[in-house]
Image (cartoon, rainbow, N blue to C red):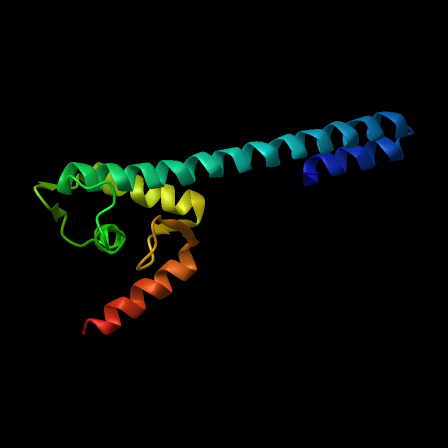
Length: 138
């Protein structure tokens, strides 16, 4: 429950309105539960949106649904690297969407070597993976 609602409930109790305070607390708990469900749904959609955008860029620039290693190339663009890619260029708007969606989800999509499909990993894990690959190529 928010601090404001908590203060209101305390004030109501002090002034002899315990039943009203309880009602406010129950309604606040319901709203918090609904809010958590909505945040989870939004995160799920943002996660699938990020994957879809990455695949769309791969398809537009390379005619490949998921070009091997493209998650590294796209992350380089997110970090301010060049946006020329395959037969096209990734727009600044697309890079902005990649940034926004990765921040919303707290993750990035990665296809491990030999895997048939990409997996979503945390941004911390992704940054460590990206850094280790960058160090290996020096």
